[in-house]
Image (tube, rainbow, N blue to C red; front, top):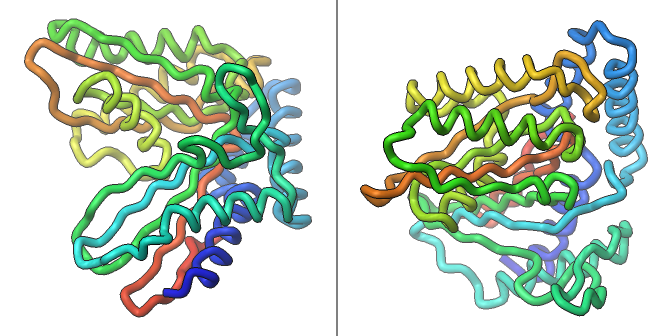
Length: 289
């Protein structure tokens, strides 16, 4: 794998994520539009679909907030990454930010000096090792409107599934229209506080049609989706039948005295894109309409 090829492919990956909604999100928005019987939220959903169509056709960002970029890297245990891997991810973000262009979203945390889209620890790069000989690279650009709705609750273990259900539903209700619904809600349960937060955001990478492999958690996902949509918050907080497109939960083991529950909300423009690098060095993008 050559560095220049890699940079070029990552730039295209970021461009895809910013301009083309994933198929599952697009289909869910279409379904929400068909099912909506109130004029005002239906108009909002129609605008979202038209916006997504224009962005795809003209290769323009779906939203003016092109987000803070996170890369999820799943590395096959037989793979040895080149030393330039992370620096090339940063270079790709820098170059595509100038070429598209992307809005310069990154600032120094204290003095708020703008540094473009590449800065200290940004873009965020998270690694995990998996079986195999391939590399899977997923990019998740996330805007501030939804990221500011992030939430952590340290529940008592005795509160159990019912406590989890209540805190998630209560948080969705308290968010109202702020995260630009209909949203995708990621929930992380277990671990420690920081791991639960990571799980919540990672849950956003799942396809809407992909239920948790644990039947008990899958039932909770579906129940939370139904109950959230019954709140009537609706598209952009203007009422209606669809408040969330999906609720996705990731779980890991935790301390006997802990029950962390983290929530990460994604807006209607739930952007992400995936690239697989095969053992032969081929670059395969996730299919888009």
